[in-house]
Image (cartoon, rainbow, N blue to C red; front, top):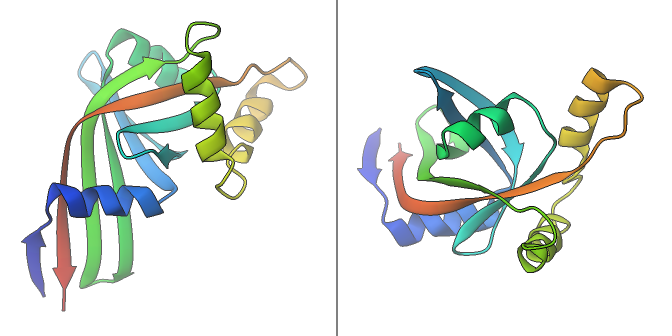
Length: 147
């Protein structure tokens, strides 16, 4: 197996075709990693969520990372890491960004299902408010392994 670095442009291409990633955030020196469904517009990563631990932590510490993998086998894979900053997109001041996020996300299969199902599990019959946020990308790095 040979492992090589990917260019930033190659990493952007991976982000453009992916829809599932892992989001890493931290608070008080404790990391927290969760799967997310996302869409990438070539500049920012957009996510639909509901309020919970990750949102609470990112509001306190907006520095985050996102990992996207494409795995064909144990010795053939791609891994892209994005370092960036969390930004919540509340209404009405981010109406345009929210519309863009929704437009991009609804192209993904069941884009709304995971965050709503997870929150419904925890809150039972309470009303669930959707929350859009974006990761403003600071850097993109990646590795590729080939047999």
